[in-house]
Amino acid sequence: MMPRVSASRKRVDPAKAEARKAQKSLLISKGVDSGLELSCMEDLKAREIAAVREPFTVPYQLPTSHYTPDALLLHNWILIETKGRWVGSDRTKLKLVLKQHPALWIGHLFENARRPIKAVKLKGMSDEDRAKLTTYGSYCDKAKWPWAESRKGIVPQEWIDIPYCPEREAAVRALLGIPKNAKASLHAHI
Image (cartoon, rainbow, N blue to C red; front, side, top):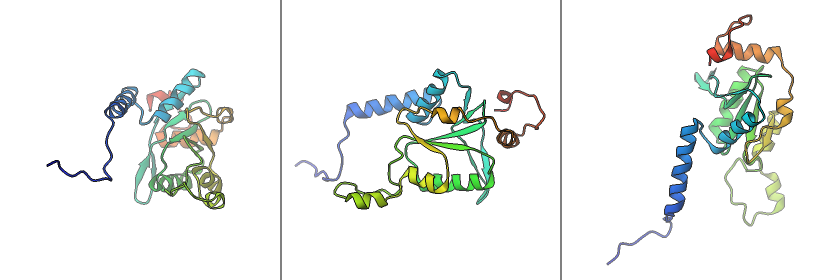
């Protein structure tokens, strides 16, 4: 007699499992956490924009913890956070970081900004009910946080064109422990 298999148990396609394993190995070898983050860094490199991946951690209270941005653009001192899946703890963390460090400029680059915050079944949902859902993008709009959508990790040109701001530089330097007047290379501290 064959053992009974639960109907809810999914069969794992060996080819897909192998592809996921290969993708994970590639990400690890490139030193990134996600495909979107890898695409973002490759886009910046291709456009010859100086950027550093996960340059430092930002301490915040409640309880004391740290946030590590995905990238820092070196010419204008803006931070980029790439997100495929954006869970509640990540949203709370960013609220606290931005409240406690208001001089930081953090752009949120989503793989799908139209994804609802709350996991719901969209199939069969009316257009009216869909319009009521809070999406990643609408959440950022409400919080007045800059955001963009790019499945390929392409950083918007508008973010690259943001002018240099001494307050942003001072905020990042303070987090890195680099004195304001120090001419030391940023790379020596990252």
